[in-house]
Every structure is written in structure tokens, then in C-alpha cells.
Amino acid sequence: MDEKQITFKESERMTYGAMDYSGQEMMAVISGYDLNIAFNMRTINSLADAEAAANALAQVFYELLMEQLIQEKSHLIKPPDQQTTILK
Image 1 (cartoon, one colour):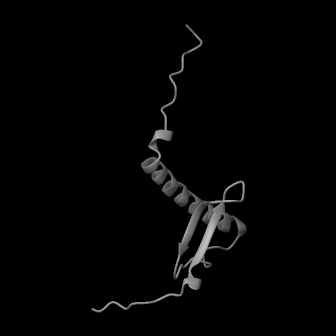
Image 2 (image 1 turned 180 degrees about the vertical axis):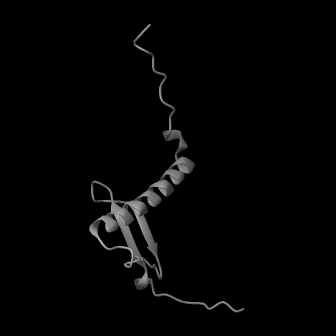
Image 3 (image 1 turned 90 degrees about the horizontal axis):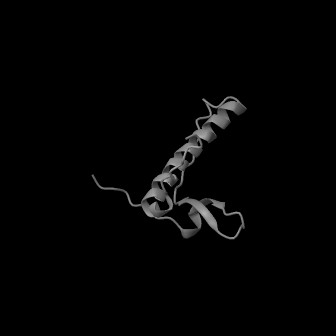
């Protein structure tokens, strides 16, 4: 089966992102051509449903971020200091 080749213009690239606190640099970016963000509006019938969907997506991105952080900056992850008890 032949695969169909599709070409996009650079202006058709979609980008969504989160800026850092200074507003100078992106902390995270979702970008691509033919980027499709779809919500199942049949299942979202209230503000609570919308918040649940947004929170679930946030959790997905959080888990991906933690995986990448562990892979690329594992030196930042330190075991907790040994705590001494105050009772002897």
C-alpha cells in the first residue's frame, strides 16, 4: 500500500506553550502540523466535567515531564537527608 505524502506550509504549524514567570522564555511547547486537539463534548456536560478533563490532561503532561526530568536531570533528584529523631 502506498502511503500518501502530505505537505504543509510553515505558516500552518500550530504552537501552544507555557511561558516562564518572567514572560521571556517558553517552559513547555506543544507544536506540530495538523495538530488536532479534540474534546469529546458528548461527555463534557458541566464545568465539573470540563475541570476533570483538564486535570486529567494536566496529570498526563506532569507524568511526561517527570519522566523527561528524571532522564535528563537526574542529578537534581536527591534522596531526602537522613532525619534524626528528637526523642532519644
